[in-house]
Length: 210
Image (cartoon, rainbow, N blue to C red; front, side, top):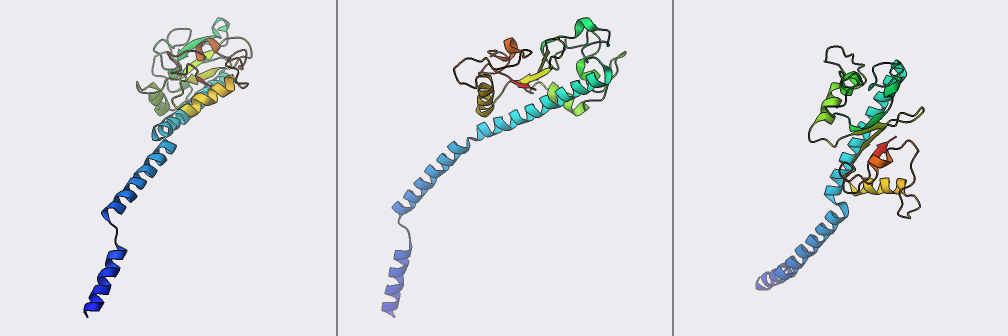
């Protein structure tokens, strides 16, 4: 019987871990956890998700402006098709309180959504929930621009928050990687969307749609 207990104790001792071994395993797991977190970079992933949301919102805004123009024959910042002197739209964020049509009465958000100001007509191109979301003080502003020349595009731009989107813009503006940002259309808001650290983030370059 004593031999059996002695043999059992030997097996039990051999099957267990010493404190040193446990500390080594815990240390290795800690190193692996840090390596995984460094590879995943949760802050970068969160910022990338926000940038993706901003891109989706800018695309919705551009589509709404295009539909408004196609249906009415003039842009929402104009008062009508005869308002030919106000085709251009200077760089301004979408929910700026000064962003009204050239008549100074109707806000763009109201004309694209559901107008509440007397004398304004909403087109219902944008849902009220969209306008409220992009109007929030914590939202990453969307800037819009059109140089007014015939055939020019309307641009909607925002400051990238993730390194992935910063590098994407850099690669688009400087495809030959010579350090000069010179690859953009003639109607692009280059003086506002390039080198503008006040409104386009630390990189200075906004993501612009289209």
